Length: 426
Image 1 (cartoon, rainbow, N blue to C red):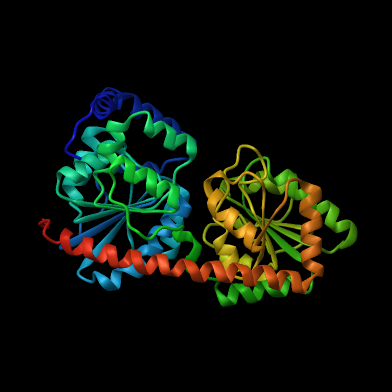
Image 2 (image 1 turned 45 degrees about the vertical axis):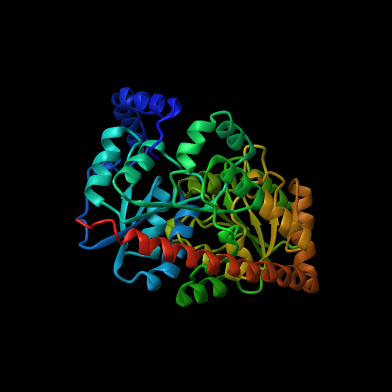
C-alpha cells in the first residue's frame, strides 16, 4: 500500500480531524449498551491484555458470522503454523461474547477506531506477523499502518454488494491501493475475484464461500437432553437470527400452523439477544432462555449467545432470518444445513445471493415470501419426510464441494505465513 492516491490522503485527513467527535459517538454507544465501558480504551488502540511473546496472527471479523469464520480458519490453520498465537478482533459485543463462549482462552480486543493515532498504537503494540481479515470490513488507515509495519495481509471470503463494488470502481486509484496492499485475497465468488484482480489485488485461484463448510455448531449433550424432554413429541420449528419486523411474520405463520397442529412450538432465536424481551411480549409473554425458563407453550425465545447448535439439533425445519423484510440482506444458512435442518429463507438475501442461488437451484433451500407461504412450507416439511431428506442430501453435496476451497486456501495461507516469519517479532 505504498501508493498514496488522493482518496486515501483525504480519508486519513478527515479521520484525524473527526477523532474528537468519535469520543461523543462512543459515549452515546456506551450509554445504550453497545460498548463495554471497561474496555472502551481498546477503541483508541490502548491494549487491555499483554501481548504474548513470539509470532502473532491477527484475525478480524466484524460480527458473529465473520468471527465464527475467523475461528474456523484458525482451527484449521493453527496446526500448520504451530509457532504462532492468535489475536482476534471484533466490532460488536455479540461477536465478542460468541468468541468468549467458543474459545474462552482466546486473546480478544475490540477493533480500534480507524483514526491514525488509534491504529498506530494498536499496530505498534501487537506487531502481528500476519493479519487475516474476513469478508468486507476494510479500514484504510488500519490496513496501511499494518502494511507499513511489515505485516503480511490476507483477505478471506471477500464479499461485496454490487453497490459497494460500483463505489470502489469510481475511485480506481484508491481501490488499487487498498486491494493491491493485500498479499493474498480469496473471493467468495468468481465475479468478485475478477473485479478485485482488475483493482490490482492478488487473488487466490480457489474461490467459493468458506462459510459453506463451517464446522458444525456445538451442542451440550446434557442441555440437549433437557430440551428434548421438554419438547416431547411436539412438532417444532426454528426461526433463527431474526431481526425486528420479522418476528411478527414468524408469529403469524405459527398461528396458522397451530390451527392444524395446536401443540406446535416455534423457537425464535433473535440475531441480537437484547431483543428477547420485546419478542417475548409480542408472543404473549413467551418463556425466555435468557431468564432460565424452559421451553413451554407455543413459542420459546432462545435469546442467548452460542446456543444455536442446541436448537438446530431439535428442529427438523429452520427459517434463516434477516431475509423476510426489504431491510434484510440474509444470513449464513450453512450452520442449519450442516445439522440436517430442512432450511427456508426469505427473498432478501443480497449478502448471500450467489450462495442462495446455488442452494435453491440444487433443492437444498426453499424460499418463502410471507407468513402464509412460510406456514405452508413448514407444514409440508413436517409431513413429508422424503422431501426433508432430499433437501438435506442436496445440502450435503454443496457442503462437500466447499471443502476443496478450504484445502486450496490453506496451501496459499501456509506459504504466506512462511513469508511473514521474516517480519521480526518484538
